[in-house]
Image 1: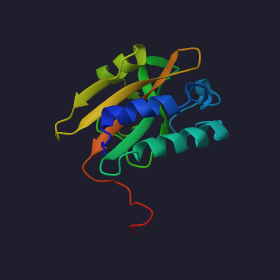
Image 2: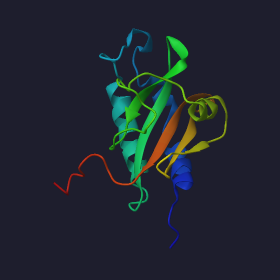
Image 3: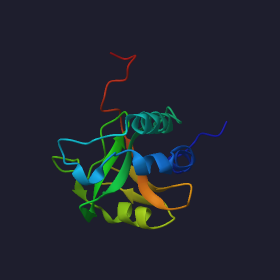
Image 4: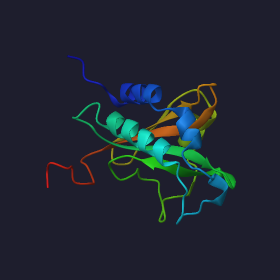
Length: 157
C-alpha cells in the first residue's frame, strides 16, 4: 500500500477545497478586524470539514492546515480564513490573525505552483494555491508538518 506524502495530500486538498466558497467565506472582508470577522457560516463549515479531512489523509503525519486569503486593506498581508484541527505554523506573530505574507505563501497565491519551505526544526511547510471554478487563485492551503498534535485529539483525553 502506498502511503500519501504531504505533497500528494496537498494536491488532494486542492481538488476538494472549494475556491468559490473560500472567496465568499468572509462575508464582508473590508469590515473585518482581528477581533471581529463576519463569516458566511455554511461556507465556513464546508471548508472546515474539507480542511480537517485533508489534514487526516495520512494518520501517520501530523498536519496543521490553514486556508489563507489576502488581507483586503493591505495586499502585502494575509489573514487566515479557516484553520484546521491543529495550531498554525511557525511564522506567525501575536496576534497571528494578520501577518506580512511570507515569500513562499505569496508565490503560491500569485502563481499556479505549490511551494515548500524547510523549517529550522527539520519539518516542512507546503503552500498550495486554491482556485475558483473560473481558475482564479483566491487563496492558499498551508499544510505544516508537526512532530505531534498541539491540540488533544477527541479520543485521547
